[in-house]
Amino acid sequence: MKNGKTIMVRRATRDDLPALADLNREVQEIHAALFPEIFKSPDDRVSEAWFREQLADHRATLLVAIDASAILGYIVLRVLDRPVGTFGHARQSLYIDHICVTRSARQRGVGRTLIEGAQARARELRLPRLELDVWTQNHTAREAFAALGFQTQMERMTLPLD
Image (cartoon, rainbow, N blue to C red):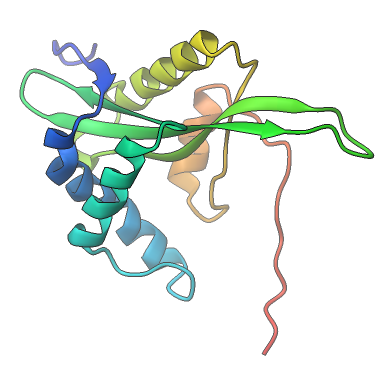
């Protein structure tokens, strides 16, 4: 809670679809500006359909952060189950597929509250860790995740070919 308002986390519902699409527009705009060759411009109909699919997917968990008046952010979670391999041990984690905090609610503890909700879900599923991917050029997100205790374990590099 910051600024005197309580922030709560709950599971998303079909009634949240328009708000989820609105929030996703903010994230999609950032990604499309950073990497227009990879990310499409936002389309609320496409986003809403994607969120509808996620709500129906038993492997996904969608949480929303709310205050008394609005949805301030969301997080989409998936269980990652990596089997034992030749060189690695089997491992499981709860993967943060998407996370968004609306611009007007940043620096109010919304992201922290969503991550706490993800931690609670991981504990409920008896998973030992959270994992996520973040774009290197998205400095704001990288700093926010580091402040929440996330540590970089791996970086992916690319070599564009003409």
